[in-house]
Image 1 (cartoon, helix red, strand yellow):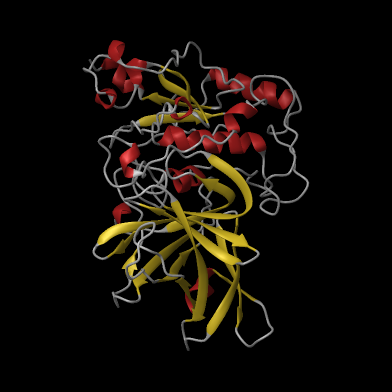
Image 2: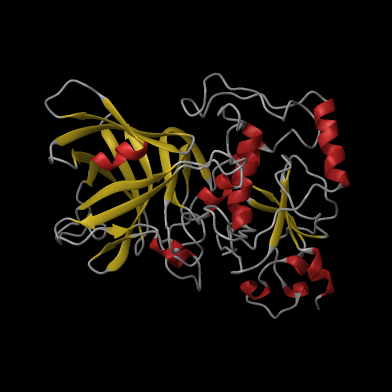
Amino acid sequence: MDTTKTHGADTREVSGKMSVWLVCMALVTVASGCGGCQQMIREPFPMDPTGSISTCPGGPTCGISKALMEEVEEPDCPTGNCDPGGSGNARGIYTIEGGNYCFVAKGQQHFCPEAFINTPEGVMLDVRYLTQSGVIRTQVRGRLEANTQRVDVLAITSDRTELAIKYRVQGEQEVKVAKGDDLSKLILRLDTMPMRSGDTGVPILYELRFTAYKPPGREATTDKVHRYELEYRDVRADTEWAQHCEKDGLGAVVSFLQGERVSGVNASVKLDPNVTTMGCEKGSIVTCLAWGYTPWEPSTGVRDETRDYVFRSCLQAKRAAYFVGKGNTKSYTQSGTEIFKWDQYAYGDGNAVERVEALWSPQGAVCINKENVRKLEAWGQPQDPKMLNTYGVGPCTSKDFTVEGKLFTGIRPEALAKP
């Protein structure tokens, strides 16, 4: 996947400055009274992420295509096998492209945790099988780390990206909330999970713990992500604590997204106020949040539909998943590729982009310039842009944002001199 910077590491992925056309568009937006192209919903996010939203009427910069916000159905196949030639289960959504975000079972990566779900029956964790189609749901229980007293886990949520676990020690009345460094006082235990659907063998039993809480830096402008280390162990096999997201490399951490359930197959998003999605830092979920592409207005934390549209577009753009809306779930990213990005909210800070790769929506590329794609060989064709199958997606003919596309990616200007 493309090199990123979300945790103080060097980056080769560069954001583009607003060119003159983008400055003009920004001025038009301000003059029209859009106020950042957002209106507040009925309740503060994340309490009601499905509440009605009024975005700026008319104009290419404020309107969005709600049809492209609709959930794209997952194909019926395991994550790894949906992607011919892919490795593991990572398409760059929950962890780094080509990596793996699954817990080890019997010596192999197997169970892939994606989201905590608050239900009337208790807190559940959605877990995707690596080797078999489907997602299973297991209940989350808990104990105190200090004295092994059992606790009832009442809710797991996040305030934007800051995790909070509401619990009550069994036999007591007081309800407590663990946040920040206090999270390490709790050990979470998952109900047993079979190795595969219908398996009658000995199921797997995991414990989890969150440690090494890292709040965002005080001087952070766009990167306001709260980060945590997650460790797990196989209780019955009496394994040592292992670090989750280890394929991310040194300092592997997780973060959270409230109110949106992200598909591990195609990065399609479903709004659900009871969901707290958990991703590894270098996957597109956390990376896009760190870039400043949040589903909420940064100063208030209130969900904004247009910002959410850009966030969902980033999920596809980050990993070069051009054709999700066409039924092709493959990611066409190339490790180490330098790209520029710029968007409606002017987060870019590099030079103006000369060569547009694509304009993005939540379902992939709205338009694509084949000669500027990151990985020609990914199409299984010779290194000739004219031979690439773009599933009917046409070339980009302008640099204007539209109701369909709110985020551009492009090639650095220096690439113009290359053959």
